[in-house]
Length: 446
Ligand SMILES: *Cc1c(COP(=O)(O)O)cnc(C)c1O
Image (cartoon, rainbow, N blue to C red; front, side, top):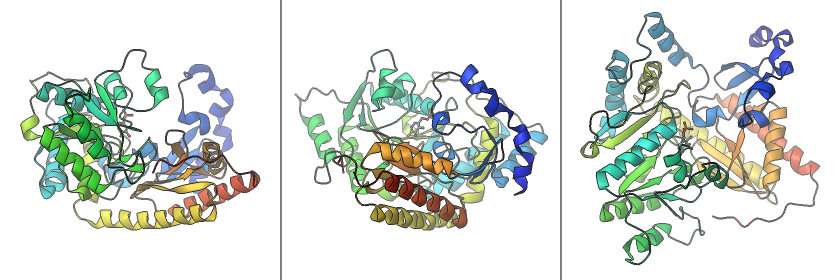
C-alpha cells in the first residue's frame, strides 16, 4: 500500500516520546483505548505514524459520515482556500454562507415542506443544544425541559442537565437545573407506553411537574446505547406536545445527516419538530459546524441576543454545501445507505445468533448499529481485540455494554465486510478465550 511508505516507522517518534502522557490532560478518553498516533486517513481507512492501517468504524462519533478527506469535499475546500475565500466572519454575510443556506433550503428543507430558519451557533453540538433550550424557554416563558433516560445532549451546563449519564453529570460541580427526566421509549419494556406516562404526569395537577417549555429527544440514542424511538412513539410525542403547547426539539446531531438513512432521522415518523439541532456530520469533512433549525414563527430572538465568535465556519459552509449538492439532491445516496444498512444489520444478527449466551441483540437503526453484550466487560474486551486486529470502534450505553459500528456512510461494501469480519473474529476470540463460565445475566431494558 503506497500510503504506508510515507509513514514508515522512522517517523514514529511521537508514540515513543510519550508527549501525550506528559503534556495532555488526564481528561483524554478515546485515546486511552485507541492509543495509536494517527497520521493519515482516507475514506474508511486510517493509518498511524508507523504505517499501521485500521478501518475506522468510529467515524468521529458520527462526524465523518462521508469518510475521511472525502475528495468531493476536499476539492471544494481547497479551491475555496486557494481563492482566498473568507475564513472567519463572525455572523457577517458571506458567499459561502449564502451558498450553504441556498443549498440547505433547495435540497433539504423545501422538498420536505419544512419552513425553518437557521441559526448558526458556536461550532460544536452542545452550542446548538444550548441555543435550542434558551430559545424554547424564551418563546414559552417556562423553565423546565423534559429529556429522557439514557439521553446525551452535550456537556456544557444546559445540555448536561439534559444528559442522563451520571459520570458526566457529577462533573458539573453545580446543580443541574431546569430538567425533568422521563422514561424513553421501551424503558420499562415493550408493553409500557412511556408517552402515556408523560401525558399523565403533565395532565395531573398534583404530579409535581411544572409544564415544560420543551421536550428534547434523540430519535436513536447515540451515546445512551443505540436505543431507537418507535415511529409511533415519536408521533404520539409530537401530538402530546401539540396538545399541551410544548415545543418539540429533535436533537439530530448524531442520528441526522443521513446516519439512519434519511437526511433527518425523524422523516419516517412523519413529524415536524419545532426545533432541530444538527452538528456532527453537517460539514461532512469533520470541520466544526452547528445549526439550530426553528419554525419561522418561533424565531423570537432579538438581534445579538445569543452570539458566539465562531458562528459561521466558512470552510465548513463550503464542505457542508458540497455534501448536500453531491449526496442529497437525489434519493440515490439514501437508497445506497439503506442497502448497506440491511447488510450491516444482517451481519450483526448473524454474530448475535452465533453467541446467544453472551450477546443480547442488535441495536440501533439504519447505519447506526451495534450489538449489546450481556456482560459489559466482554464488550470492552471485544473492542480491544478489534483494535488489535485493525478495526477502530467504540462502545456506548449506560454500562458501555454496546459495541457500536459507525462506519462512514460512504464505506465500500468490501471495507464494510472486512470490518465486520474483524468484529466477528474478535467476538469469537474473546468469547472462546473466556470459556464457558458465562457472564452474569443482565435484565434487558427492552
Ligand atoms: C455529540 C452529541 C452532542 C454534543 O455535541 P458536541 O459537539 O460534542 O458538543 C449533542 N447531542 C447528541 C445527540 C450528540 O450525539
